[in-house]
Length: 156
Image (cartoon, rainbow, N blue to C red):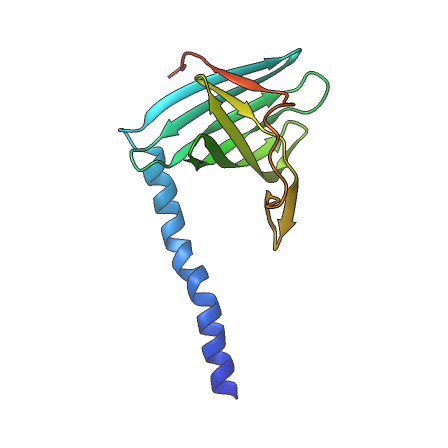
């Protein structure tokens, strides 16, 4: 029995150990991708603004930065990583709020591409095993939205 529990422990820990060494290399490689296409966007809704800078790799992976400045509440600053699925960009947004730099949040976001604009959708988010995702049985609403991102010149 003791031998089986050791084997079980090795099997359970193996994926975690393997991912520890590879995760940092993949992240750094995607950040240094000199062939990536850069796209920049800005969205304005009243006094609230958002800036989205994307880097699109040849393999379709997307990463970038998203800053949302709210006039009446804390601002969010973070990174996005994901891929397009047809005309919809699905990303994970990892961010900090301006009121709490030591607290990290991670939420899924969906952007619908239409007429060279990206509309930030609103959907029901569920969490399971520490991971947040859009509810599969609830559609993402791209009609009643706050931010529509229009192309803007990139700063770098």
